[in-house]
Length: 279
Image 1: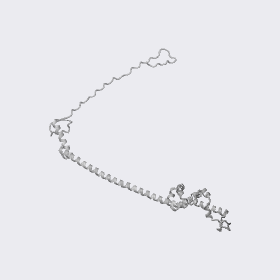
Image 2 (image 1 turned 90 degrees about the horizontal axis):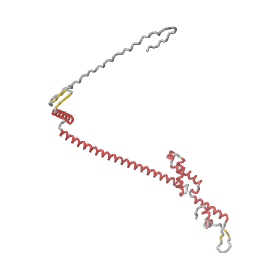
Image 3 (image 1 turned 180 degrees about the horizontal axis):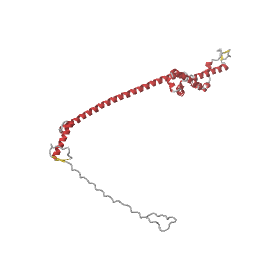
Image 4 (image 1 turned 45 degrees about the vertical axis):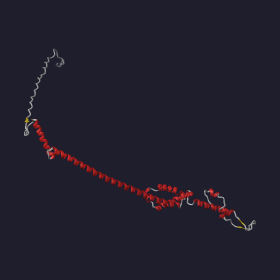
């Protein structure tokens, strides 16, 4: 539809004539061309009828009789057997294969037998090494026990010089604990027996000061103290009368009392109270 023309100002009369628009031109479709196909060429056929017929190089399809096929297969098989085994005699090849299997079986048996000998040798080596390790461990243990026994006897003798034998074992246990808490492992390994004995003597001396009852000869010393006290008491307060043998009369002189004789007749209450059995 043509566009409208707006009226011009001041113009009069009918609007101007607009010419019609011609229809679009269309091009007729071009018919598609049918492709032309060339029929495939017939393959070259060759028919073989005899064993000696040669196959041409350009043959694509080969035809042969049953006899020709069997003959050619037999020739190809014999050629392959001759190449692989040196003969095309099937019986000989079968015999050779059986012999080969037997040889392989013998070789495997020999290998297994040899391997068994190696295993036995390895087992003997392993056993010897185990026995060696066991013997070395026992030797180390025996050496350790001998060292321990020697050290224990040495420390026991040193302890018995300060502590009563009844308390030696318990005090040695305390001494071992004291060493572990006071010194490191490196110092303990380097410690000589003389140093160890000196440390033990100092340790036990302090222990006896704290607990006199564990000291060496404590009971004997305590008994001697009580004995001395009783002697002092007797000397201070008593004199025994001595007669002239006439009987009944007044003594003409007095002599000191034999303290040991009198002490033997005393009441042992003080000694028993101190925990001793003094006789």
